[in-house]
Structures are given as C-alpha cells and as structure tokens.
Length: 348
Image (cartoon, rainbow, N blue to C red):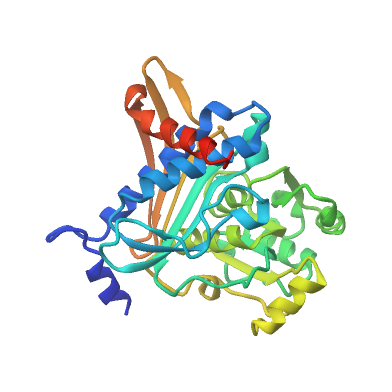
C-alpha cells in the first residue's frame, strides 16, 4: 500500500513524491515568519492566531489531498486548524495531516528559546486517533537506545540501560533527561535524580525536546513525562525518519476523558509504539524555528530579508535536512495579510 501511495503522490509527471517535503517546509516557514513579530510581546493567542492564519493560507497551495487529523485548537483553546478540515489543493493521494502552528506558544510570548512551527504528513488513515485524550505519558530515545528502553520499566532502570550503552554503567550522570517543568512531574524528577542522571527542564515545547533526544550532539539522551498527545503523534513521524523510539500511554485528565476513551475502545494501560502512533513508513516531518533553541535557529531579520532555519524529514528515505532560507520581506506580506484576516475574524 505504501508503494502505491508513493506513486500517487507524484505531484507532476516525472516528479517524485520526495518533492512534497520541500512543499511542506513552505508551510512551517510561513507560520514561523508570521509568529516572529509576536516574540516576546506577551500575547500568545495573537502569536498563535497569526501562525495558524499563515499556515492555513500556504497549506492550501500544497499539492496534496489532506485532512487534518491532529489539530491543536481544542487543547489550548486557541485558534485552530480543526480536526476534519480539508487542506492542500485537493490533488494527489489522500494524506493525514498533523499540525502545531506553534509548539511553544508561551515560549514565543515570553521570547524564550525553543518555539517552533511544526507539521507532519503521512498516508491517509495511518495516524493514531486518541479520541480527544489530550495528554499521554511519553518516553523518547535515539536509535542507539531504542532496543533497551521501555515505558513499562522503572525510570531508574531505563536510565541505567542508557548509561551502560554510553559506557558509564556505574555513573548515570552521563545521561541527560528532558522533562517538561510541570507540578505533575515532581515524582518523576525525583526518580531521575535518585538514579543519578542529569535533568534538563523545559517550560514548553516537548516536540523540540523529543527530537533533540533523538539527534546527535544535542546533549540530551531521553525525554520522559506527560505531554500532549498531538505532539506525540507529530514526534512519531520525526522518529520514523531519524530512527529511535517513542512510546506512549494515554493519560486522561478527567473521568469524562477517561470514559470517552473507554467508549472509543482505547486501552488506557496499553503502551503505544512508534508504529502504533503512525502506521505508515512514508511520513514527513517539518519544523521551522520561531525563537532560537537547541534544535533550530529562530526567525531573524537582516536588512530586507527574513532568515529561517528548518528541519525537513522523510521516513521512507531516512533523510533529515537542515534548510536555511532567506525571504525578502516584501514577499512575505501575504503572511501578514493572513494574520490581519484572522484578526478581523476574531481568531486573535
């Protein structure tokens, strides 16, 4: 099925589907450029609204027949690219689309490091449906640790296994774990410290944190803790390209969420694998930096140009590309116009 899907994704006769990746990066670049002027201005909904409007404006030109299956609006009570929304120009194969116009709205509003614009695409029907369970417990690790870590194991055991592979079985201080700085992680943080590992607390943006755990030379080895389910599915598309592992377990926040998951036939105690989260082996992940972080440079302004830095990944080829782009400011007005239109519609 994947080969047939790949064939159908050819956007013009003679052009292979790998060109889709470079079309998608235009979408996250637009979102990042639209959000950039809001960095540090304290208005996260305005930043998110600008990013959503720009993303929607550009995604409509991408040659795909896409359906948003993972949107962001409901969880953040934010402007949204809503679940079920049709995106793309309607040509080519049907694809699932997951979007996070800003992973790190608070980071953007405060001008803090690590905010990114993100989207992922995979074969139609291949992305996991969490049935409105907005959070999950996660474990993310790079390829060298994929066969030894397991969400069902105690935290300390996972850390010891990673330390052993790093050649420091008796000293877990060589291991660094990324954790969202939330009150719910008090016990997890203590367990990691008791195991002797180092911790990097992040205030927001666990997609970037998860990808850093899979990338070389980032100084991090694992991501642990409870974060957004949409972000987990987006991360799975990236993990498929980079190698590594993401495991997740649904974490309902209320009895209503729990019952909704049970009614949908979801097993709340089941540990979901990378392949459970995204079944397709032909998936795409793109991200563009909004504020500079460990993973990506943020939007910069130099003379008459806007500078962006993006990651583009494709699982079928296992390719990860860094894309540095210069955009003439006068040519980015369409993103600003989209943001103004969002304001007129009350989205910001």
